[in-house]
Image (cartoon, rainbow, N blue to C red):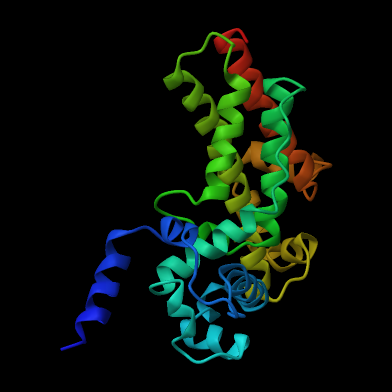
Length: 245
């Protein structure tokens, strides 16, 4: 049975969220380990080797601390992932909203995409309640939509629609990149060459005339930035038309 003091400390951690605990002062005036340092090192490992490489033991090794040291701040890997996601979202430079709702939401989507492509593991790590820096994104969006005559449910639906498009498009890009890496292809052009035999047979069946037309006539197959932006603008156009804003 653990000592009474230790048991009480563990129970306290179970009842209080990570973010509330981190707001409290740490009674260690000379502590060299901080939540930011923990997140920074864990993010670096995930960026270089993927999310599966991030373990509490690996983290301790990279930090040069005792295996249990990080548990002073996080209860385990779930909270570590929260710290990592929050650290990444701190990179997002949110616009001030002075350019209007559409330009602001467009900018947020574009900037978030850049961050998620730099850290492709985030889509696997981000789940549950948002972290403080994540929550700043809907806060900024709802603020710029305020005053346009939308009720709060509609405003949230607008935000959710744009973010859903952004995440869906980014996830597709990340999956494609993983497929290329797994097959040993450096570019999409190499992928097309590798799949040429299979695709040629499928097109010869005559079942896919529109896709065949795309293959032979498209000029922007590899322009993922353009593809993302035209899709985003179409979503924003639809919102503006539907809601008259």
